[in-house]
Amino acid sequence: MQDSSMQDIQYQPNLWYAPAPPTQQWLDRLVTPGSIEISAPETNAAESEKREPAVRCAHCNATITSEKYKTLIDGEFAHFQCNPTGNSFYFGCYSKAEGCQIIGQPSTEFSWFTGFAWRIALCNQCKSHLGWYFQQTATESFYGLILSQIIRGR
Ligand SMILES: [Zn+2]
Image 1: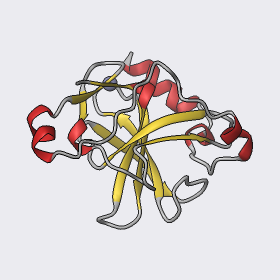
Image 2: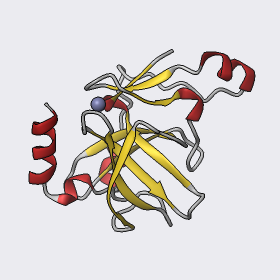
Image 3: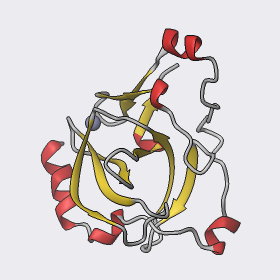
Image 4: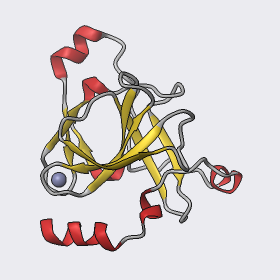
């Protein structure tokens, strides 16, 4: 499993991973998958600290981050975007994801977020592609984790 996912990464064209600004065509097709439940970030800090459900890799169940690190980017937790090769991604934003391994050089090409460079974020354990790490400055950064690639606890 580990070997085959690494092979996939090597043989995929790089653009497969590249984010891109949304086009009108994709905005028109935007649908919210019924199977994915998006809850608003906790506003009550005490409640959030109490529960802190783990966010896990959908492939190997490794802990990736925690719901307490959910963050709003451009006012939204969940984003729907499409890359130059036509792959669409529905992902959520987290300020921290210690279970991710970041690979590749930072790139601002096709970035979905103005001013942010992106790198590929893999599961540290099974190396599945979970999303991207977006970085603007040394301190301004977040992870965009593909919601079908993670399991969100409650
Ligand atoms: Zn994994």
